[in-house]
Amino acid sequence: KTRVLEDLNKNISLIEEHTGYKPNFFCWPWGHKSPEFIAILKSAGIAGFVTTRKGTNGLKLDLENIRRVELRVFSPLKFKLNLLICRNYLLGKIYQVLS
Image 1 (cartoon, rainbow, N blue to C red):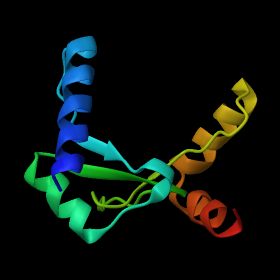
Image 2: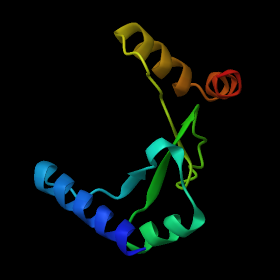
Image 3: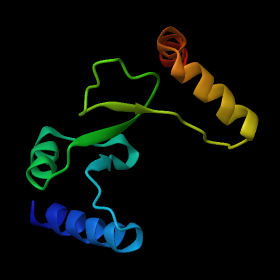
Image 4: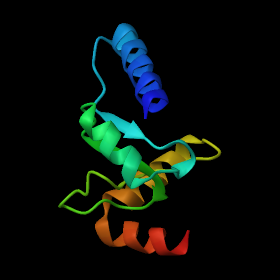
């Protein structure tokens, strides 16, 4: 718990120093998470968690499981297609199942 909080506080300080904003969302490295870490991070002021899962988020956002747009190899066309797909709830759900 101590190591996690030390790492979190150091990262929050660095982000705040460079951007002027205090982050309140956390992106799980490699998608590894646990209920224990969620509780620790929430107690430190983290409001939401971004997963490594692709797909569309619902209208009622689950702040503990925010899906993301994934681009392993970037190209402007692929980025536009991913945004188009993930903007549409039904297409995003199909993409989620197929990928």
